[in-house]
Image 1 (cartoon, rainbow over the protein chains, first blue to last red):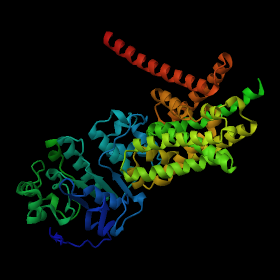
Image 2 (cartoon, chains in turn red, green):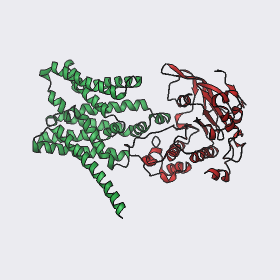
Image 3 (cartoon, one colour):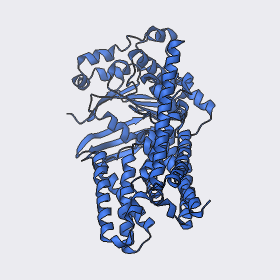
Length: 270
Length: 271
């Protein structure tokens, strides 16, 4: 594999990155899980890490969050208090009696009004007193998002946020993320193995397969041979015409945070 | 009330108060077997402490520490499942303890260690347990939020700045401490029962983690008082009697909840 990442449209962001990985490598079980990972997320940016299963996406997220020791390289990250993390899957033991409000404020004490506001923002305000064990997959992801929002993060980190969410819920959740970015101005770093919707909802894509093989705007990356080799030509066509459900095909390429989607576009699939 | 009975009641109540909330964590984290390992190791700890002339409590705590470190090292290696590692440690420690006690047969009351002897606790023991109650509940109150977050999801908690490794060690230390203090009351064989059973009995009635912890303590108190009563009336060993009462609370409560669910369904169907 070409170890030199093929970078497209570098567009250097003048702002200081919120988090930056410099040549990071992580070892596990006597082999390299990922190597030579250099990436940065700037304020207000949505960056998506994509790659096939086993590419090391979750490893990169865990390294970024400081959850796994880094074997080489360096990471500049903000304080934990400025990061909101939505993990891939949280299997809560039903043996713990827990309400949604309690789960949302598990590490940070907050007045009920703020918990309610965070849940409202995530679209699950009605569930504040529900026991956690009755939540559906999509509701659970939104509750976890509310927990992250309650921290008023500068950086949201989401690891495969669409687990257990059906397609309609998925597009709604991506719309929600876009809205969160616009209203709060926080940066979003997210992981996905699913190209279909991701390409539409992101400013910058980073393709990972043990190493970073390419990165750039979704459209530019989709045309790269390295991307097509990794995901196939069909993936490229998906990326090039990502807006089968959105009416504005150019919205994803706007370098600045795009305006919220028109109501009609959302109701089209919601 | 006779003096020895008052001491027994106070000692048992103290243990129940500590065991309630700690038992909840044992239940939530599926650490029941870990508690057993600690308890069985305590036997070896007592024997080793007596061999070198140290206080038994110190022996128990030191051994609990060694076991905790050994367990976390082996568990992280992942050659074997945690279940297997605990099985090796728990029974290994029990066998070593029994062997060590046999070597020093004249100096140790084996049955007292295994089953407890709450009617023989001294005022000094009661004071020690009282200190333990204050210490354990204070640490739990301070660390509660972090411990709970770590229990829900360690990665998420750590990403949100909770010192999860430290809290894991704190929890193991607290469990070891309660095992050491409760040994006199229920004995090493049944120490874990006094943590697990009241917590398990509290679960169906609890709406929040805190209410489950409080209720577990209350049920533990009932079990201790009831067990002592049974012991007095029927001349049964006190420690096992307490566990039997706790078991009764668990079975009764579970049946009650199941029955209420059935009744509710039946009412819904007929109305």
